[in-house]
Length: 383
Image 1: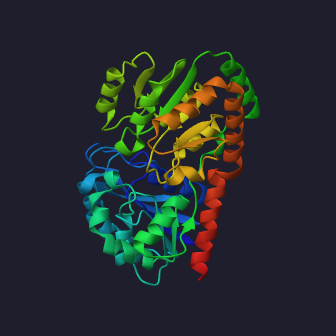
Image 2: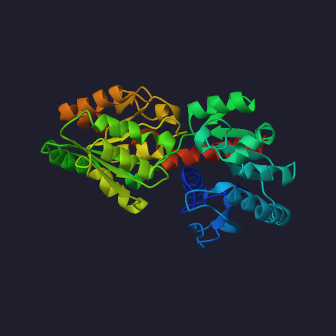
Image 3: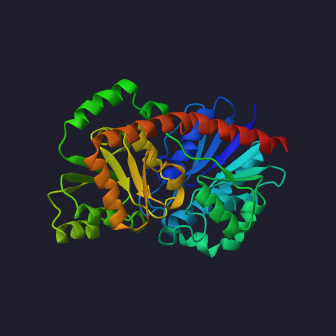
């Protein structure tokens, strides 16, 4: 059986979507290839990555800002300690392939590996200079030249969306970026019976219940959603998540006198988010720079119609007019119209939600995404 080294500076529960992808793929491929994982643990809080039976884990300390935010010292400490452990691993083991999640910082370790081992780099957004400027780790902008070298020497480069792939090819000067979307677990998808049961409850409601699950960061543009709420009646909004913008968003709600319509639920564990999604009618997130947006898939898996901005990787997820609506980025007016349509036509809302559920089941399950990575592994090792 072939042996793969997976390298990612974050791994659940530490970090965000990039760590989740590496977890889900390793979990599903452990019976097809032998997998070792090199990652970090959150030193200050003594938090370690979630383990997977049959997968060997090797961790180094990372001095992070928080469990969700790496910070410069988190990146540098991972690279410093990771370099020593990485060299030991490639010396003591015969790896057929190395898979780096994130070109920077993780892919920087590729300069220490033997040249005869092929490697794959998976781009996730924050590692591509300029893709999300206000969220970009400083290191990614400072090391653009190294970033180009990392992807140039890779056997294959993947990206989680067409938008990110096209942008990365221009900025990092390479061609043939493979697009492998993120996914959701099959057991997150509701059944036909559950959808019909929930449908009956939703048709009885007079108030449209909107949910937004997101880190409260600038580029998520939740302020646009809040301003749209000021233009509509018979609608309530629940915002799930924490982040640097919470106080600013709460002040906006207060200034617009929307406290009776909008509530902030704060951080909710992943295991409980599904219940909140099931209790809502519509999912809305007007982000302008998400490289993908797994949370849209999670909402669709619960039978919700979704509304997002026509920007970033979200365009690969939402089929406009079929599973939800895509609106002009930063447009309060277009967002208001889209939400109002679903408030005024509950049958339309339910049809979009049912179509979205089918799209997720047919195109966005982790099982199919793992097979795409496995095919890429085989091709990389065969060359």
